[in-house]
Image 1 (cartoon, rainbow, N blue to C red):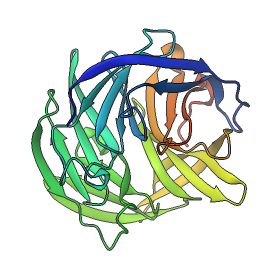
Image 2: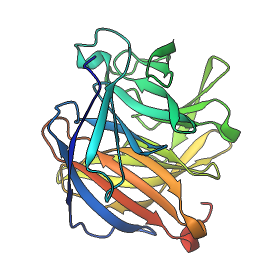
Image 3: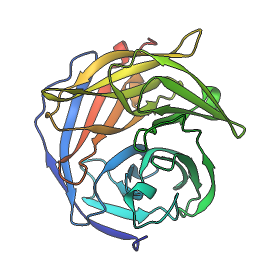
Length: 279
C-alpha cells in the first residue's frame, strides 16, 4: 500500500442529456486528480463527510459533493486476497460502509480471488470469507452488494445478473435472478430497503447504462428496468449510491470506471417524491 495522502481534485461540469424514465439529472462532472490511484472507481457509498469510492486496485477515495472542497483523500486498503502489487489481487468491485459518527468500517467484495473482506475504521483487515465462485470467470464476480432484508446479512449480485447470493451467519445461498438486460454493475439501497441496480449493456454503438428495481419473486428476484442514463458511448457506470432528501425525494449518485484511459464521470440524479413508489 502507498502512503495515505490528499491531493487536489479537478471537478469540471458536464452537459448531459436528461435520462429516459421517471428520474431527473441534477448535475454531471468530470473528475480527475494527479495521483494515479484516483482511477478505476468501481464502487460508491455515502460517507460521513461526503462520497466514498473504492477503486478496482484497492484504493479508497473520499471527497466532498461537488461545490465542496476540491480535494480527494486517498487511502489504500490494508490488505486483500494476494500481492498488493498485482491489480487482480486488489480488484474490489462492491462496497458497504458501516458508519459510526464521523468514522466508518468497510466491507468489500473482490473479483479474481472471489471473496469478501471486512476492514475496520483504519482500513486494517478484520477477516475474510471466500465466495463460492460457481465457475465464474476471474473478472466476472460480485459487482453489487447491499444489506439483506431488515439489515440482516448481505445480498451479493455477480456481473452475470442471473443470480442473487444471500450471505448470512457465515453461509451462502444462491437464488435465481431474472430480468437483467445486461451485466450488473452496482446497486444502491434506499432507506426503506428497496434496491436500485445499475445495469450495463454492451451494444455495437457503445455502452448503455440503465437503472432497474430489484424485486422479490416466488423463486428469487427480478430486475425491472425503469430508466436509462444518457452518457457517452464509452462511459461505464460502476458505482451507485443513494441518499434521502427532504420531502421524500431520492438522490442517486453514480460514478463511471475509467479503466485508466477513459474519463471519470460523477452524476447526480433524483427520483422525485411523486415517482418514488414501490415497483
